[in-house]
Length: 77
Ligand code: HEM
Picture 1 (cartoon, rainbow, N blue to C red):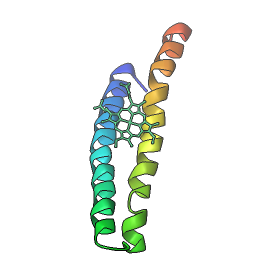
Picture 2: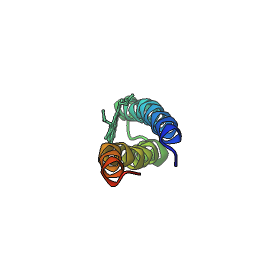
Picture 3: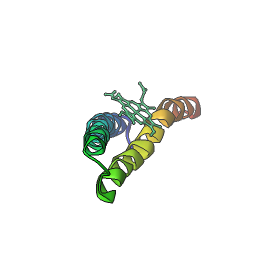
Picture 4: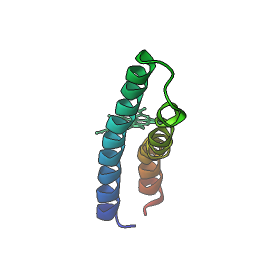
């Protein structure tokens, strides 16, 4: 991947991570609201897991990014 393309992909991914974090927060709040009204249905209880899994994958990519850039600069690619 060219350097310019890499920057576009990483900034899109950062934006994606940011918006999924909002969705994740909404599902956690929904859990508290549902809990206040009694036992929530299982789909409400498990709803944060999908956005959390997406956050984990995109977050690990964002974490690795500065290191892969350093490797590429060092290897002259
Ligand atoms: C589950 C594992 C997660 C991992 C491994 C992870 C990792 C990361 C990393 C490495 C960054 C970039 C930091 C930087 O270079 O400045 C980041 C940014 C961010 N993370 Fe996560 N994250 C995770 C989950 C979450 C969750 C649960 C939330 C919020 C509910 C969240 C919200 C954010 C936000 C708002 C940013 C800033 C994005 C931006 O630059 O606009 N992340 N995360």
